[in-house]
Image (cartoon, rainbow, N blue to C red; front, side):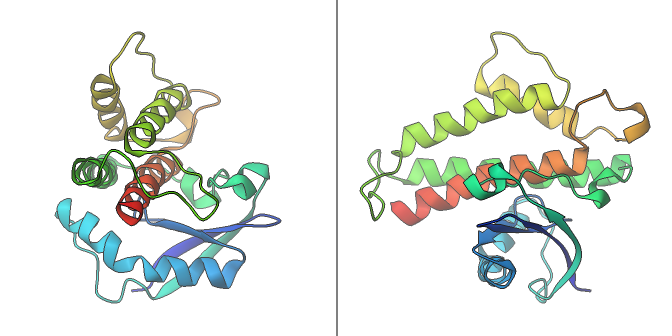
Length: 208
């Protein structure tokens, strides 16, 4: 079966996200480039899925675009920001555990990338880019902000404590009818959290 993909189309950037595979999300200047980049990362994502013991099919890079959503300034800045309609569907306990396991595999990929990288990374084409520890801290800081989007509170917590709490929340079944107002749907939450961890894991690998 083809991999279900949502396209988030902004004015200058498009994100292609594999809806059933948290973290497998890539961007490009338009739809075709975003899909081509997503396909180009299939082998790298397959190793993430293998770490979760949820193997990716060999033909996973065959895509079916099931939804297009209009992006916003955050999309163009560089982050997937719009909830897809399909992400508002209920999630049962079995699927929640599967999605959470894949997110944890994304975190493990980031940890391994950081452990294997030098403290100072190669600079980007314009001389910019964070070094290793700053990237890891940035991901942790973002996850603290995600807490509020999932209706969680954990004051004065360490990154490890936050991840434990996040993982626990992500394994819970979800239904929009009972979700706290203003919080993220579970499927969007795992997409965003997994994307951010992998995006920076792969950045660290590429700049080491």
